Image (cartoon, rainbow, N blue to C red):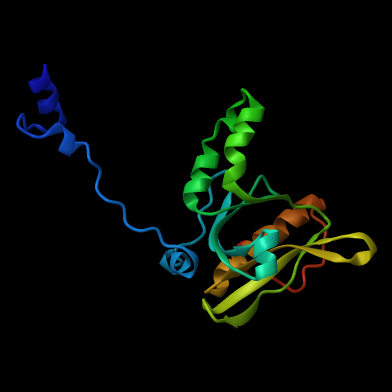
Length: 203
């Protein structure tokens, strides 16, 4: 029986089973600016037949990153016409996509499993607004294009929800246009103040 199992595993009955079970060492995980530079920006944003827009960029979407002005590599998703989600990476997005929360069952336990994966969740509405894409030189990342997503509050005051940036203008233009489309959908297709005209792929 032991000889048969070894033959099925690698075809060598003399191979050491303990050695065969040892996985290859993992490469060190990049973070911060290095992680962002390692991302592929030459490909168009991936979107499914259900209209999901996926864009890799930099983001500030927590109170801490907004206060400290630290950019974090992120994967931003626009789906269901006006739902905005921000994940740390594509792996977290893939895990969220296949989570049990989308298949019924114990919703409380399912939400506990997916909540740590999500950095930001916003249902875009008529109170949201984006400013125009601008360029700026950053000490760590070099020249970046960036824009801000804000929420209009009482007395006309705006609260910053998140900031997004990318090395190339296209990612910001694409993302801003997708967000603006979500805001238009929330307004029933009406016009809205957006801080300038977007010229990205989804305008």
